Length: 297
Image (cartoon, rainbow, N blue to C red; front, side, top):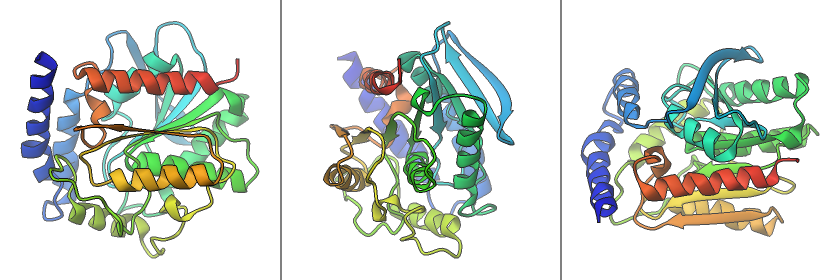
């Protein structure tokens, strides 16, 4: 009963406070400030430790929980490619550090419109390759992200594959943004978080002069064959539901081991409520199990 009331309250908060902020009429600088404040409600486990550092020339946050280190998880934050950072996402990063047993590395990649494609992809690539250069084996690295960061994770894996760079052991995607043309978005009865016009503005900012069908911008248009095992989690009440299903179906057709989990009545990147909302906590426990399962022993 209490969880039902909490879920209802969180939904109302997202609908009344967060969704109105994600409107193209609101200046991006103000959105960045207000959304960063909103993320303060996403709290990591108490025993997590965070350190700011540099890797591959990029500012990063390193997060760990407990003494064990099963491997390294590179986490790419969401925010429509226009806001978010390694610090706004400490809640979800911390919970993944706990459930996966990994040290989590979260790059503070460059944002659009100041830095359009391929800046974010280049930054993520630099961090991943720096890990390899430091002697971390690819089968001890996992890759994850939410929303734009989830799409960026797929793009990075595709680019690494095409360069014959060793791939990470697995991919974990929360509410992935993989089609910036937005031609086949789902229309839920109630969408508590995202607005289509806001996504369309961000796509123009991020794409710059590149066509949005470029597979490294919209990986749904790319070749997914040869990618690592894939876990996709998505809420049933978000406009990216259809894109998540399209990605899962395409990956399966191209023989990528794929698991799609649809969480009824939940919203875009509901996992940020882990530690409060039981279903969000359980989702990250499942994500952590997926990550651990595919790391080399």
